[in-house]
Image (cartoon, rainbow, N blue to C red; front, side):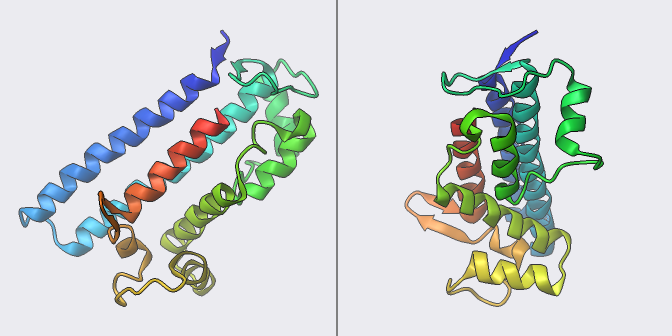
Length: 204
C-alpha cells in the first residue's frame, strides 16, 4: 500500500509528543523532590537520544519508501532516478555491503540522495542552517553516548561556543535543561527537538 510522506511525519510527531509527556512527568517528579538533578539529567539524555534516533529513522523510512515507490512525496518535484520495487534490493544498494547506513552527518544523506533522486530532492531542500542544526544534534548525541575527549571537545566547539554557562551546565546532559529563551520559557531540549520536527516537515 502506498502512503503519503506526511504519514511518516505524523508518526514522528507522535513519537516526539510521547517523549514530551515523559519529560513533563519526570520534571514534576523532580520538582516534588522524587528525583535528584543527576536523575533528571539522565532522563533528558535518554529522551534526546531517542528523539535523534527517531529522526534518523524518519530519514531512512522516507528515503527507502520513496525509492521503492511505497511512499509518495507531497512535493511534485521529487523524482526517483532508478525505480526499485523491492525493499531488500533498495537497502542493499544504499548499504553497499555495510550492515547499516549512517544518515548523519547530514552531508552523507545529501551525497547519496543525489545518486538516487533528481537534484537530491527532497533531501537537498533544507537550508545550510538547518543542516548545521542536524549536525549540532549529532555533536550532542556523540558527547552523551561516547563521552570521549574528541566528542566532548566537538560539543563545546560546535554547540556551546561562547554561551555563558556554569561548568555543570556546560555538560551535554545538563545543557539540555538550560533555558534557551525566557519568552516563551523554553529550554534547549525543547528548542532543539522542535527544530528537528520543522526540518522533518520540510523533508516530508
